[in-house]
Image (cartoon, rainbow over all chains, first blue to last red; front, side, top):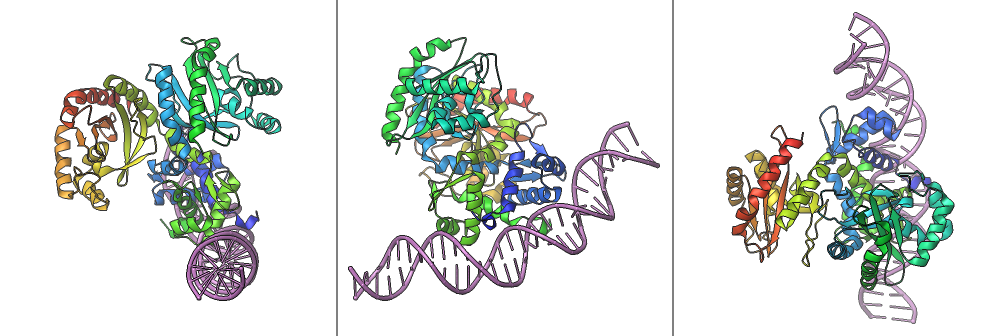
Length: 251
Length: 251
DNA sequence: TGATATTTGTTCGTATAACGCACATACCGA
DNA sequence: TCGGTATGTGCGTTATACGAACAAATATCA
């Protein structure tokens, strides 16, 4: 692409939007400028533009995003049939298993939740469409990485910040690559408290009718209820069933 | 705001993103140009910028948004504590009522879902955070409109496309304004199949500790299971209970 | 089928608008 | 009162949007 086909003003503006989030509901111009590493004047123009378009509120000091920005993300969710197609299957899965079920796709080194059927519990996991988790230590992430060519998967692992969220987290790239090979053989990935202590999950890939992996689905359960060793026995057949059903309806 | 404080390139780019959605997963440059009413050359630069930043894919003909755009909407969801605070209460509400529970805020003439606890049913309603419904015919929309000054509410109704989704939909602005006054008195809004045949719902406003209405929550039920006349008797006390609990925790 | 419209994608020169620096002003806590 | 920090503004430089023109693909019709 020629450099002249790039609209800097647009790219900068998107960066400004992403500066929000992560418990940063309100930003001043200077704060946003620091976070985005853009010039204050530029950030100010972008924020005022957002405010003028109704994507942000401005009280003279702080800027805060408005619900209108959800339209941007929703443009993807509603434009992509995948989340809507998968949702009813997740609902079934959640009901039959009595646990939370989710679907996600890979975006860089992270998995992005595109649909979710959560279980009503006292302990509820705070994940919703749009939530992100590092791929290397999430069950769906492992499955999605395993679906890639070895070199591509390795490249993503090398780009990832492989930190040990718990004492059980696998952080050695070579160990992880071995794990991916095992997943390709078994057709499923099991995570035993690698992301968070007390949380286990099992995931399988979702293929469309041409056999291309388009997403992953998983079932998550508290380790106190379901030990990792039992995840396969309890849930794999349910997941495989859903996998087969979806392969027939996804084009 | 001075005109020079507006970044056209950014505003146009956002418009291009919003051109997707509504079952338009892939757009050509010309299609996007028509939808946005922008010059083809401008749209092309915006789309190439999106592709370059990873927000879109380009196969030489069609552009499609990638999951990365969810980060934009998620910036709002994760930056605003409201959805996360409300979620567990919705889960409880859904469990106790055996029906779907949702929370939303007003954005222009529409309500935007910010959290949801859906019931696993054969008939599942396809709404998720980011989904939008016209305010005038949704229970949460009525409640949120009722919380505004009369003139503001009226202005929004006048801007709304008041169409009859079903034979039961109220479309007369004056009738709707009367309804809003009734809602202010009763403290809740009941919708009897005004949005979709077979769907009833009841909503109450959610106030923070200073008494400002910051959102609305509702319970939706199939009319076949729960006639509209029974909605109040069955669910109002549950909703009021949640309303009281949230008023204490929302700042 | 071949010829002709019509639509779509791309390139290019130029008027114009955004950028970022520097300075001026306002705000806040010590 | 005085630094330190944040916001607002003017201006020269630089980059972008515009519109037209061209090329390529697609549709229309004899």
